[in-house]
Length: 173
Image (cartoon, rainbow, N blue to C red; front, side):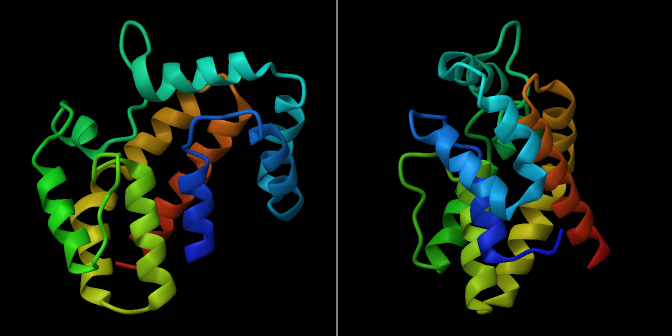
């Protein structure tokens, strides 16, 4: 998968909790992104509560453990709010960016930052740091877990897209 700001924002957005409009949004996106077609079809008959339950199980609080916590700290240090948070906050500050209510090591925030760096084609050293010191160290593991653990086609497809993104990045080093 070739990286672009638009693609990175799409992947970040798919990590959001589904709401009442999410089904319609996915169906619209599937027209432009064929890899979402199966997910759009499946979600057409999936109750929102079931979709939200799968989101919660995968990303927030599964039992006996959360299957795919979308946080670098969870993957790299086995805890939330690990040392990578402060490093990422410093990197974001250099861009004039702050991670709002989400921790700095949340994958959605990291992908948004990567999108900003890709779009602007500025600060290549920060783009390199984000990938080399952060995303490349855990994204493939997260993506594999997501594609294997999800009961919904949407998150399996997202995992495969993230895995492709990780492999594409590794091929450019």
